[in-house]
Each structure stands twice: as structure tokens, then as C-alpha cells.
Length: 344
Image (cartoon, rainbow, N blue to C red; front, side, top):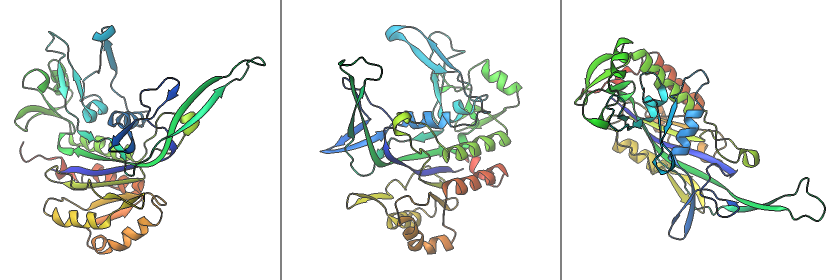
């Protein structure tokens, strides 16, 4: 059993990828304060929406059900992880009062943190007007919005053993697949297993491989974000670090720091964590780093970590090439041990 854990970094240049609550006629970006410092951020919900929207058009996504009105509204997906990859990987909660055949919950298989600017960056305000088609002498409509440039970093964890495995016993929201959905999944080929103390249904290894590989490829090709008409920019991650770790601890949360008001990749921290957690690593650490991101730091890191690269403990390459290769290995069955849980 392995978890893929690590860090994802977005390179935002004059962008407004995730809006906050507007102030009068000014569209603000999401931001948080640490002391006097301001850090723009992209919420985990937004990034997960980008991921879902970036799935191939051929991949069916779970329909959304909406009910109620006013302050008693509910919205949830179909809750069928056997049929829909996004329900499997992103989780859901379906709470239908008095109907145990529909009430269910699945904790996320892909855990994502908030993507916060590594270096404090105060958003700028852009002022605009709308006067096209107005008669001479009429006042224009005034409006404004915020934007910023920053490197945003967030932590990620993928629980590989849970992909395609759904609990079917327990009480209330502990059940991922209630009846009759569980019976339908079993009729379609899901096998009964014991998983982490619960009875569960498990999809075929071929489908589980496919879902993991598709997620990895999609992660390197993310698109989306707000304000694309005025602040379009690349939203594919500029840096992705993923490592297979047996116990699910993420020791790579501090590989980025700040020096002279610039984001710094700290090769010494990465080296120290690889050495400290060597007994828990279940394969090489994969560092996907887009050329040009953070200037010469990519080449410097490669030189400083050359011994780890030569020893096979670390691989550095383009994110799309590196994780596309890992997706290929998974689909060929070369990483099947990562999907097995010894506690099952």
C-alpha cells in the first residue's frame, strides 16, 4: 500500500484565478492575512473544480442533484463512485432524511490543501469603465477588480488503496454505497472484500489503474480559473512533487521558502526529508518542474541533488513527461502493490 503525497505549485502571472466576496463594485480575489502580510490563495474547492472540469470529455462525471429552496437547499452528486470517477476520487455526501437507501458519504481519496502564495503579495486594483454606446455627456459605469502575481503552493495526498473500493456496511453516512446501489455494483462485477475494518466492494484492478492514471495525467493539464477574459493565464501546475509513502505522512510540505522576497526551492530540505523518511518511501521521489519556472533554480537543484538522482532516489523532469510516464507504469500493472492495503 502506498499514498502519493507531496506539493503542487501554480504560477500565477497578473491573474485573478479565484474570486472572493466582492466589495461594492470591486471584484476581489481570495486572500488571507498572516500578521500584516497578505497572501492571495486559491481554495481547495476551486482547484478540485478545475481538476474535475479538466477531465477528458469522454469521462462521464456525476450528475448534480439539487433540492429544497431558500435556506434549506441541498446540492449533491449522484453518489455513485462505481459509475463515476469524480465521485470515487473527490468524495461526496448525500443526506436524504428518512431514506437510508440514498443516504451515504465518501471521504475524499484525493486530499487537497489550500493553494497559498509562498511570498506575501498584496493584490493590485484595476479600475475600469463601461461607456460603449452611451450618449455624449452620459456618465460611464465604474467598476474595479483585483489581480496579482504569485507562486501558490498546496499540499496533496492520494490514497491509492482506496481508489475503486467502497464501504457497504456501517451506520448512516459511513456507508459509501447503500442498497440498492451496492447490489447494482456487485452485479456489474465489483467484488466483495474486507477493507480497513469494513465490508466493501472493489472494482477490477484494470479500472482502478485507469482511474489513477487518468488523475495523474489530468493533474498535469489543469485548466480553469476566473477572469479569463481579462487575466487569462496558464493554470497547469509549474511544479509537482509526488512521492510514494507507505504510511500516508507528507514530509514534503516545507520544500519552498522565501529569500529576498522571492520563492526559493530548498534542495537541502528535500534532501533531509528523503533521507529521514527513506524507510517509508516506496519508490523514487518524482519532482516535475516546468522549465523556466523560478529561473535558474531548476538547474541548481538538479546539480545539488545529483547524487540522489544517480542513486535512483529522486527523478526530476517535466511534469507532463514525468507523471505521464508514471501513469503508463500504473496502467501496465507495474505499481499494483501500491493499491493493496495490508490492513484489509
